[in-house]
Amino acid sequence: MNQLFSIYDSEKEIYTAKFYKEQCRHCPLLDQCQVKKQKKAYHISFSENKRRTDQTRSKIGTERHQELSNYRAGVEGVPSVLKRVYQLEHLPVRGRVRPKIWIYASIIAQNFKRCRKYIKMMVPTTI
Image: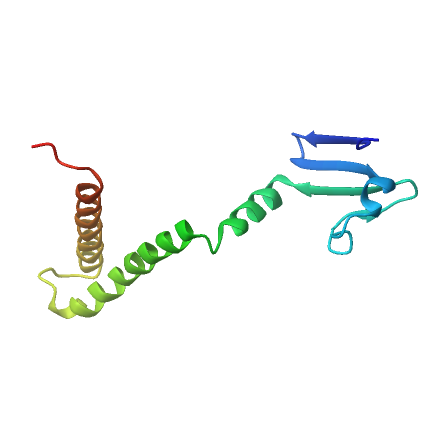
């Protein structure tokens, strides 16, 4: 006895599946399952966006996620440090727009430096 049907509606981006009650009756996770009870079967449907979100959440806490989170914290700290270090009245430019451009250019340069350093570390040199 297999599932009744499962379909993907590409226009609405929704997955839908129906299962016989006999299939789910002995499942230890039935009380946690998000299926909807119907007369002859259980029904579940979810969007593509929900699927992607759940897939991303399942990766949280993994070793790779922790590694990437450490980089993100460092990158987010750069703008605030640069803004504190280079106070707007002490920049070598005048006006209101130019200081912002100067700060963001400094941030971009810092990110390029870090990226270059990371690539150098990851790619072994043969010379």
